[in-house]
Length: 348
Image 1 (tube, rainbow, N blue to C red):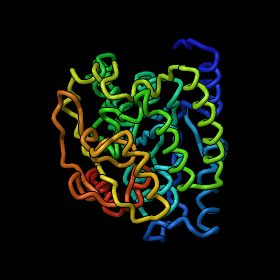
Image 2 (image 1 turned 45 degrees about the vertical axis):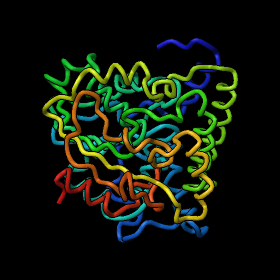
Image 3 (image 1 turned 90 degrees about the vertical axis):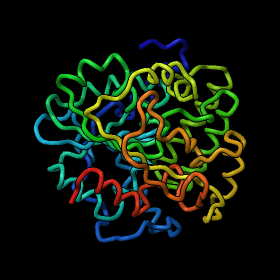
Image 4 (image 1 turned 60 degrees about the vertical axis):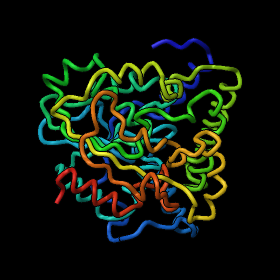
């Protein structure tokens, strides 16, 4: 792993200071298992509640960590997206409310983990190396990945570097790609990277305003903005551009036949939440008329290169009938998505 400039080295050190990469064990159940609907995140009490959940990302002693996962029994691993973390915006509904986390923990015998990793200073292939180093041998492994985590998972499943291990001792069985950037995103192209930062700044600020993660990301976004202004190449973003070297490399190798995949997709338009309406023009500047969930193109969410999609996508709305309730960071607010996860993974 090399760093062509001092700024990238500092960024990598910052990401490592957040205890990345690491495998983190999730709680036994959500904070509010009896709550049956996603909070609106409008009242001070709701926002304070979410902030306390997300603060755990900055408090490594608040949850067990492991260098790797012990073998034996089946395992579920979450793989987060760009600018995010296990205790971050996209997976926060799982941690905050409802019975899903508790049901998953019971099904996997308290073996639900999250892979926390750098998303800017290294590329998804390096993330996949760090991930496979923490996976147990001869153990049935299921994966739930989101956003850029889809590309990390594709690298694990399809890059030639890992094929021998996947055919011998690493047993990945089921994968759910949720809002996955499997074919990248136009927002990662040089002309649109300012919009990528603007969108995530706004989305995370609305998801958890005032929380530790929002404060941390404000610092991170400003640092990245400065680096992009200086024409620095960030490996984690470069690989997300459609047609990147990594995406092209993955297009030639199918996923192992023993792996069954499913996909959760959404097309966001005509926002029902007034707080989100001004984000659509930002996204449209990169996507044009192509359907998207504000960050990832709808058409690329089920892309696996030469391998045809396995399993039927769960769509919130569809590509031609978009809706405005669900977008890139709140898939797990949907009961339909939660039901799909339990059905696909065989959770009672």
